Amino acid sequence: MTTPKRKRRILFVCMGNICRSPAAEGVMRSLVERDGLSHSVELDSAGTGGWHAGELPDSRMRRHASKRGYTLTSRARQVCAEDFDDFDLILVMDEQNRRDLRAFARSAADMQKVRLFCEFVTGRPETEVPDPYYGGEDGFETVLDLVENGCEGILRSLR
Image (cartoon, rainbow, N blue to C red):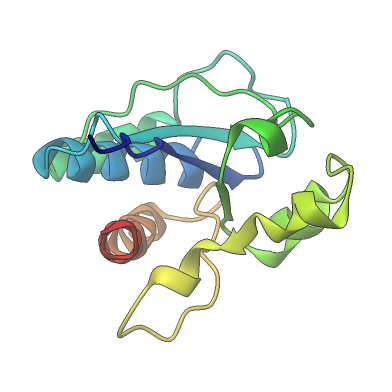
């Protein structure tokens, strides 16, 4: 008799949890479902700040994601210390997010779970996913390009 594999739990984190991290969650959810892995992968997203708690993702991000076939329905929430217990991997969109997570971490072991999302991106020079909130429409497309690429990389690492 084989022991069932433990579910992998991944948390995507950006600043407000209305652009980059819900996009990553939505794209990854789509890929996980496409590959029949919903039973073994659990996903969520959160922000380092709580300003948008309870809100849907930014309407511009939802619109751009929808054009690519993704539906973003998560509600914004702020990271909490318990997330370090609940998730195996916490992927941040930029170095500022990583620094901000130190306020929630209780130990060095907590911070070992935190990695930059772009570590999973291949064939592109970016080391961070830029925040599109105050920019133009092209910023949302750039984020989605990076997120699609990185989520494919995450999926490869899970296999």
